[in-house]
Length: 397
Ligand code: SF4
Image 1 (tube, rainbow, N blue to C red):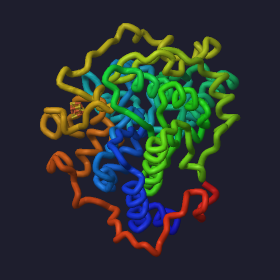
Image 2: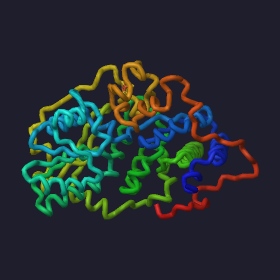
Image 3: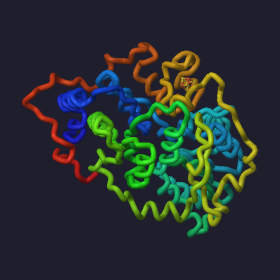
């Protein structure tokens, strides 16, 4: 456990925060992109450790949250078909659509199955030739390689009773949309560590240059996030705007090239609707025409399904960094993880769900007593080494 301890060390956290205080001269608004980062921030109370004036707002990087409600309804319509075995990762089963969730469809006799890898669907399809197997392929670039592999193998191995319901979204167009929107507050990003492990981070250079915003690709542990925040503040204070890599123990500038090649063979890029935000140009993957016989949206009659979000929900503004869960009148009252009304409450990684899970519906100032990190006193005899000088014991990851 030495590896994790190191990234959750209160003394190191205190030194990084002290360094933020030393370099910060004015207020800054930063956005963490990933839902996993949001969860870590709220769980560990990191936002409450930051110097006054440094604000973290929560971005659109929770894949379950941004899957449009109408896509959930399409999935449910397909899953109700008696000839279908509907396969999904477990986190989608309790996401409510307009009329129940996948669990309720399963309880009424629908053949809904949790899989641990998309490739499990190949085995299920071969074992059930009289049925059609549909895999719910959602997520960011992170999950795209495994989903692309499923479509590729289904076509190559002629498993024709298998298709994918694809709702993949891409991070860079979302950042572009956030920065271009009227009233944008975001001045710097903690970039998406897992996405960049697949895609690399060179595609963020033009966004950073065009909008003059620092983008620091950041990990998920508390020290990662504090370090990414410090690196972003330093850029802002120095008037720089470049893409930097805090998460260098995991990812490289070019990313995983074989995975990118596979994605390119299977998926094309097109417009995609994001739950709570709306349509963003060229922000999603779609199966290429060569994979039409494995495209569930083409095989099932679900094109006409369209669903509206509840009017009270402000998750679109939360996902763009304009508001926080506390600003929503339904937060913790009408809307809870058991009865989610909107995008950011449906998944544990959503901002509203994270605030609720760590008690912030009980205390509007935040659940300070729930902090996992307890920074020690700032000691002058301990210096925080720059990231590249520190020794990490878990080099294999
Ligand atoms: S608390 Fe619920 S209704 Fe309010 S913004 Fe969050 S998800 Fe939407």
